[in-house]
Amino acid sequence: MVGMFDSGVGGLSVWREVVALLPGQNIMYVSDNAYCPYGSRPAEEVIERTKKISEYLIRQSCSLIVVACNTATAAAIDALRAAFPVPFVGMEPAVKPAALHSRTGVVGILATRGTFKGRLYQETLHRFASQIRVVEQTGDGLVELVEQGLADSPQALRLLRQYIAPMIEAGADHLVLGCTHYPFLIPAIQKITGPRVAILNPAPAVAKRVQFLLNEAHSSHMSTVSAHYKFFASGAVATMNMMLQDMGLAAKAKQLNLFS
Ligand code: DGL
Image (cartoon, rainbow, N blue to C red; front, side):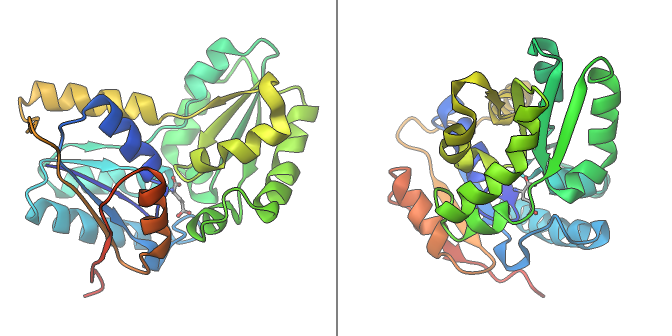
């Protein structure tokens, strides 16, 4: 069983890539939406929450955990790897491919405050983006809109326009999505950028990493019939259930008490 978690429904953008690549893999997903957003919380609190979720997933026999949240990866992946004996796969903003393929030499990055502050992001920038101009923008308010099922709303479009316009004005030809909630905003983003800006989502690369690690451990419990998908949320389940339905799944999310 693979475990996966996020501060909310954002990690479902990673879940769908893992399912596309490993269709028989059993997956258990936890949304910690009672504590969403993580982006404005201190790292210590994110570490505490993600340890609690990881403990739960390991108790449910998960042998690999995907931290399907850039903010949680930035704050907690080192602590999780030190605390638990299973492999953790985290999110990394796709700065490298953006820097490699940019023709204008200008790349926009949209992420949460927590992700921008993280060591991982700073190192990635240093390693891969020294030759290009990076226009950073924190996506305040976007996670909350996706959590409310308002990814394609006028409010989302208004905020995105405000965040993306300076990138376009600076000549960006690539936009890196540094938060797993943002792929659900791609239709709205494309209304603003049109086809001239490439939008980069690291989730397919994360799915490949999961495949590699499962093969290496010979632990992909592929079912020949159909995989079991389980979904849990520490808060309300309404948006997640709506999104599961949109993705064509009959599964319903259950509430999970992760407070004690
Ligand atoms: N999906 C999370 C991420 O990738 C959302 C962050 C948050 O909860 O602030 O960063």
